[in-house]
Length: 447
Ligand code: SF4
Ligand code: SF4
Image 1 (cartoon, helix red, strand yellow):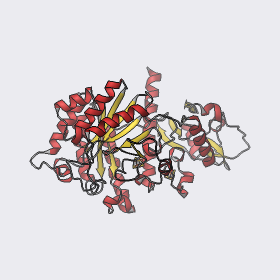
Image 2 (cartoon, protein in one colour; image 1 turned 90 degrees about the vertical axis):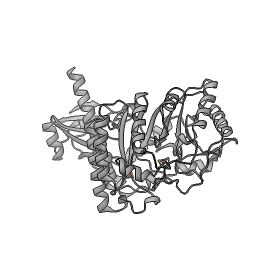
Image 3 (spheres, helix red, strand yellow; image 1 turned 120 degrees about the vertical axis):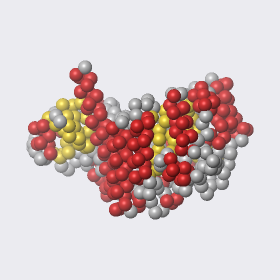
Image 4 (cartoon, protein in one colour; image 1 turned 30 degrees about the horizontal axis):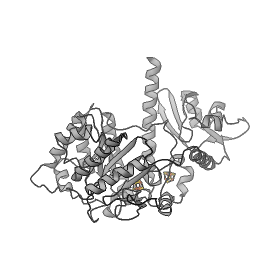
């Protein structure tokens, strides 16, 4: 066995090498992901983040459940038959939390400049919500709030809506106010991309310090124009958004394309992916990914039906493969830090700020579930705790390789289900990263 990555610090010291006895009966730990390579078999431990290569002979023996390698056992790839893997994962998660500084300043602000929008997507979770737009006065108070709660740290602003560009004025006001205080910041945006133009892109790069934009494309030109149903029927919205994506990339702003996929548009999205691959292949900063349609807005979505779900995930995999072949997907960082939060909702360093100044914890709660207001001191501790409450574990969690990093919040619409296809997709993403990592390590060694 060749250890490519050892156990991630500080657990290399805390766990130490596992005591080994050839008399014990050993089995693979539940948190292994395997990936064959021409030289043998890669093993990645999602708990320790260690990566190993078995040569062809060792791989064959490992896959047959043969005699354990002492080194595999010492490095926690194997554990005794009666080992409680889940308990070990819980302990590690507990220690990681203790080691992290929980009394953090607020450094990530998702700011809803408006809940109004210039598109009319049928699946939008905000389509029935009351539409509010942030006033200049609230924008200035937002900047004051950021200044008062970020403890001088670098701040990340995430512009959100509705369509955040529908109220550019609020963005400019907040950025100008922050600049005058000397606070350092950068920003990202979730946008439909329609309202960008040359001068907005220049202002975004220079003043808003915009680093990345997520733009949703729901189909090729005709399908997209129908699904988005923009309020400007005379404009070809698809072409305009593609033009703006080029403009953003030229200005050094990364663009992440999100494709909301269900069976009704999956084949069309495969077609769109082919078009995007040929148009953006090799363009730095361009990425794409799919997201299955979910939630009460789309009660008939394929994800809720076993037979349709399988087909949907096959089509998603086709899209991912096409994007991967042209290096347009992001890879999982195998050595990333241990996860202690699911998202902004259970992370004390993040808040949302609504157009009327209410403070929230989740993008999906724009009308209720607030934890405070920028005009008042303090946050509602009970409400904050309610966002951290976890869902019950299921039987599948006991043997799931993703358990060490799986945090499922009770209030999160995306945590409601965990289907086998989702888990397989997560494993596939890890396997892909194992291949990429191995390739890079080999290249570095050959260089
Ligand atoms: S919720 Fe799903 S992904 Fe998470 S540990 Fe359980 S089975 Fe695995
Ligand atoms: S919807 Fe879920 S993942 Fe998104 S912010 Fe809310 S709790 Fe987090």
